[in-house]
Length: 166
Image (cartoon, rainbow, N blue to C red; front, side, top):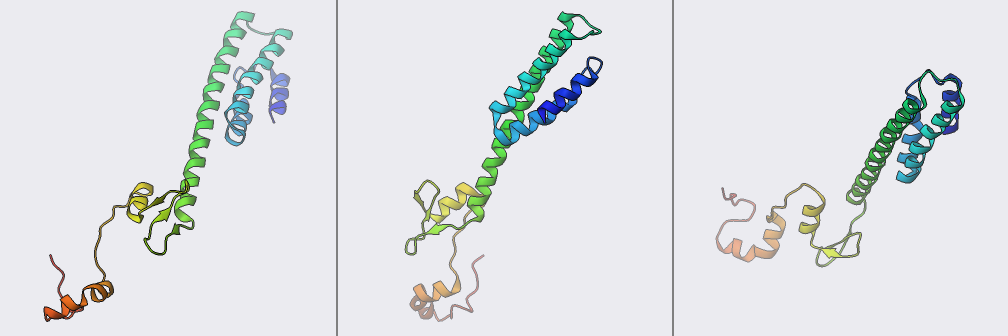
């Protein structure tokens, strides 16, 4: 794609002053291949254009073409860096979503969760660290009956009919 864009630019140069199509191969290289391929295209493509301009009958001086080429390189390098960073952040967020949406390994007895690093964390700590949720503890009626049934029956109020404290 980069060669096609440079070839098209050569066919219409030197009168098209800002080859906006250069952004496409730089964007694809930065997003899919990483920062270094994006930077390589960001520097190489304007340099090739500058070399073409030195061989053509151009409407501006060599120093003006050099300044113009330098500005393009700076803009394209910044674009490649920004897009590579966004791609990296997108990959990290996708991984976090997979971690949260995927299967969690939980101990049958203590209910701790194994993290992707192999560390075992309490479920409270894991959920607090990986989501925006806050944990509040309570006691469901079945567990209240199983663990505190004798205390609840001594008070004379069955567990199902007890009112919740306010």
